[in-house]
Length: 411
Image (cartoon, rainbow, N blue to C red; front, side, top):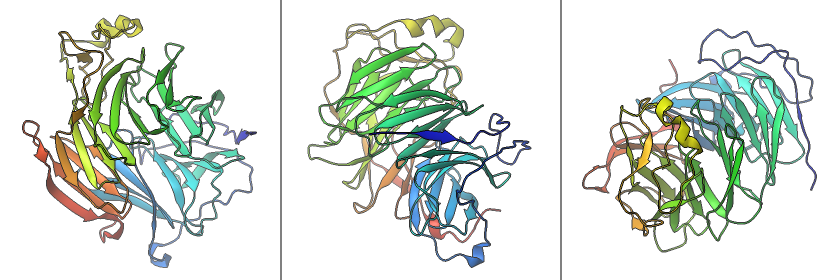
């Protein structure tokens, strides 16, 4: 199978800034690509939902529609802005935190945007600042402040955000789901994706110039996620019964939790910012919350003190070496496993808390503040629920909104 990619090279690409800020990017692009044209909302038929995706810190989510895209703030819930376009919609809308920069890939009913091109869209200027073209369908796009990652079914391209230079090409096992995840802490640069073999995961530690291969499952990988610092990886296979947590530095399996005994399709895995909880959604109509056996060390551990430990390797009998720089949510924290004698991995544990949703649509979970979970669905629903961090059990629904039909647009 042959691949090729081309990127239009802007004369100047600056680091993405906050939404609504001043930005003097300029670009020179030459392509037959259909340029987005804005229309008045009153001219648009009722939009159909094509995709839903959370941003990197779960503070916002993006909805790709048959007529453009919309951005919603999660807490409190509010539609931040929408763009209705004449030329159809997008199957991929990838945000860069809360900035005005998005990656867009065409798809959905009557879309005139090809599924083989990525637009890097500056919403402050309402225009495309660069684009990437491929010969095969794009399965996913992932962004961090210094990287653009484009996922095809058998290959992944990693580009510099500053000058669009191609940094790395990775061959993968068949990856129709477009699985790939990035760390987002400024001190660590980690990418995880399927390896060359079924059930295998490749982890690129760019800062350490190191590649780690993890034999995660016997079956193909169905879902994965990294902590913000990239030092913990959670995975599920197409069997959908077990979720495993790994140390990405040496591939050690640290914990295993059980969603159920029946085969299921896993839609999403989320890790709480303090890495105390894990949320899993599946086609069984349940969002499960699991308790993780990690803890926040506290304010007395500083990045300068723990940085040398990043190069330490752990083994099944010594887990103290797994530490990480501070995360964006808790700048003074680091991760450490509970002291004491621990087995190679904990026997699989059942969920701590649960919330029930419809079985006939896909739902994607993310953690909010104060032991809450936000859940978005491909039926246009948004739930916020809370769980008891001591007793667990059934979660309590705090909020429900059909976000695609909200009358109050952005203000």
